[in-house]
Image (cartoon, rainbow, N blue to C red; front, side, top):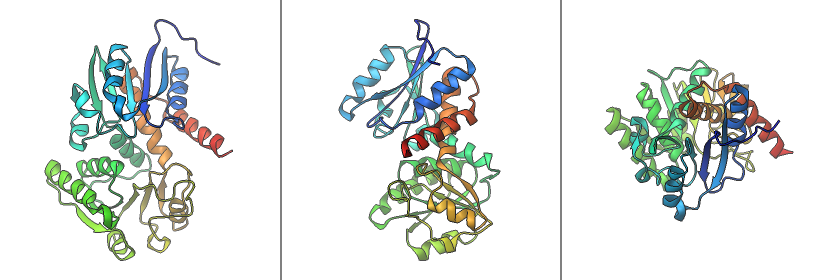
Amino acid sequence: MNKEISGKTQVCALIGDPVEHTMSPAMHNAACAELGLDYAYIPLLVRPECLSDAVCGLRALNVRGFNVTIPHKVKIVPHLDGLDPMAERIGAVNTVVNNGGELTGYNTDAAGFLAALRERGCVPRGQRVALVGAGGAARAIAHVLAENGAEITILNRRKEMDWAHEIAGLVADNFKKKVEVLELNETNLKKALHGAALVVNATSLGMTPHADATPVPAALLNADQTVFDIVYNPVETRLLREAAAAGAVTVNGVDMLAWQGALAFRMWTGRDAPVDLMRREAMRMLKDNEE
C-alpha cells in the first residue's frame, strides 16, 4: 500500500548518474513503511556539471539526507560542511546528513562492508587479506580493514597499478600500516592467497552480463577462507559459487548493499533499520530485473 505524502513527510534521496537501476528507494521506503516512519526516499539524476547546484538545492529544500553514488562520491567532498573521520581518510562520501542546513559526509560503504563481514562471523584483526581491485570500493574496504587490524595485500591490473599504490600510501599515512601491492596475475594471486583468511573481490569482474568471469581461479580457494564478492548482480557470482564448492564461507554484494543502506537509514531517522527486510527488497528487485 502506498504511503500518503504530507507536509510533515521528511525527504531523503539518492544523487548520481545514472540512477535508473538503483535498489535504494525500494530498500529505504520498505524500511520506513515497516517502522511507520513518515519519510520518503527518491532517486535524483544529477549530471556531473550540475553537482554544485544540486547540493545547494538539497540544502535549500531541507532534505533530511541523501546518498551519493557514481560519479559524485569524491567530487562532492568540497561541497560539504564537514566529514566523518573515516570519510575524510578515504576521500569519498556515499551518505550525507543534513542537520539544520549543515551537511556532513560519511562513508557507509566502509562500515557496511565490515558489518556484512561480521555478520558472517569474520573478524579482520590479525588476519591476512587478499584484496583484488583498487577502485573506489577497494579504497573504502582497505581503510576499514586497516582500521580493524588486518594485514592487506592489494592486487590490481598492471595498467592501474598507480591506483593500488595510492591506496597503500593513504593506508600507510592514516594507520601506519604497510600494505603490499602486487600485479594481478595467477602467480601473485597464489602468493597472496596462501595463508589469507579473507579474499575480497572489489572489482566488477563477474558482474552481469559477464557472469562467467572470475578474478580468482577456483584452485586457489579453500575451506579456511572467507570470500567476499562486492558484485551483487548476479547474487551468486562464479567466484562465490566456486568458493562455496571449496568449503569457504561466502559473503555477497547484497549483504554489503543492505548494510550500507541500513547504516545511512539510522543516521537519518535515529532508528535501527530492518536489515533483513532491506536485503529482501534488494533481492526482489534483482529477481524482477532478471525476469
